[in-house]
Image (cartoon, rainbow, N blue to C red; front, side, top):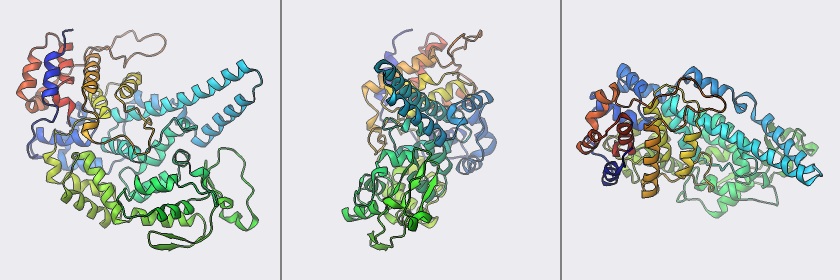
Length: 505
């Protein structure tokens, strides 16, 4: 393999963005650019679907998806996972029992091994969750839903390294985030507030009357709803923390003893628990309104107020615009999206419809630099279409090397959305290595444990009908010139996967 110097220079020279013009959706190449933005990346299957349906029908199917369709081999991989077969509460209670048993072992060597086994089981469950996530990103027909699931997972970020969250992140993504990714923001917010992964991550299980913990209350307003300039005060943080008292997690099978007068207030759903013994029943003054002390119903009132605030509409719309348009989306666009947000009671699909119909969105196509997740998934989608990979491990390793592992952001602000966070020389070097391993067929995506398949998978055929019919016309002359210098099909693949057009969406 020859050095990638021509492509490297080309990518750095054009890193700021590829040429773009206003999109006409009756132009196949331009409609493909729209598809590139709202999916994890085009492939032959999605391009055929777009050609058959036309842009408008395709977009509506993505905004209002039905049940996802996966290749049978991918569905089988997912169905075989422990996290697909066992409910989260049973899973977590099981690993907690293992932790308690390991701590009770008397022999030091045996205790160390038992504790190691416990940690390895948590790691295995987290890896299952991450594997399922990237397989859905690559193969799901509901591409916009998958992309929005990642966006909201990043918005309502939790870090798997805390406590036993490695056993919870799969359920958090699959049951709290994904079903609401294109629905009402209020439903999405409520699902995250009631999930044990969020409550454990931001310490609300420690929040009780007379022992207030403000951590979750602060992030709930600053990061999840109103935004840092959302007009709330430190007093509002304190009052929301009081509202959240008693909202926590029960990792055991036993129910706590509750005062007879409060027993009707006790709530247990899976691992989620509202313990009235720990709740502050005094009245609260929250965002200029009195919230009467009456138990868990206070939280619903607070979430209603937060989700329907004009500040939340602006903040959430601004983040969506940054993600889909660019680092500094026009104020008029954000205002229009916020207006739709308020008019539709936070219907995310309708807000995105406003975004995708806008001229700033169309003008931005091809200019947004891909973060690691977009680069890795788009490269695999384009390279293998619906051919099932057997090992997602290399993809997860690439994401870790580039600083964006799933469930790996330690701080609750989520990974940065700005292009500048990812467009560094070191980042580009890693991407060129990834391009080479995929392009040459040596990435390990088809390598499994144990005996290897008799038929060795060939390197991807990127110079396909999709390329010549739809992609080639969109490439810059410099990229096309670089591709002519490739000496082998593997090198051609590598050059194309390293091109500026592959680095942007």
